[in-house]
Length: 77
Figure 1 (cartoon, one colour):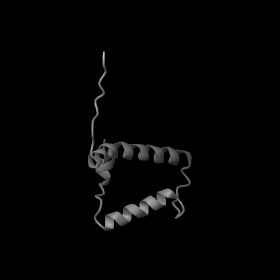
Figure 2 (tube, one colour):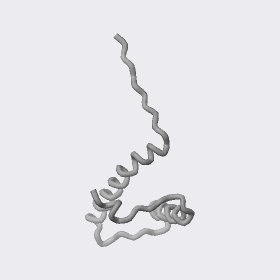
Figure 3 (cartoon, one colour):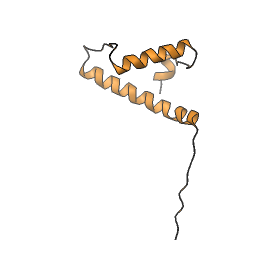
């Protein structure tokens, strides 16, 4: 008996659309967990990777390379 393996191809755009909700949820959960343990400390400094990411997002938004979602779009489930 032979087994066949089904291969699905997905474009980069479809992959990003598929992963985006999952990534948003994971980031939200991790930030929530961090804030629960360190509620008194949450400050971004230029040497932090998240700070760099936020800078990049800001620059991409200024160049209309991304669409940022409203608070309601992001957090409503």
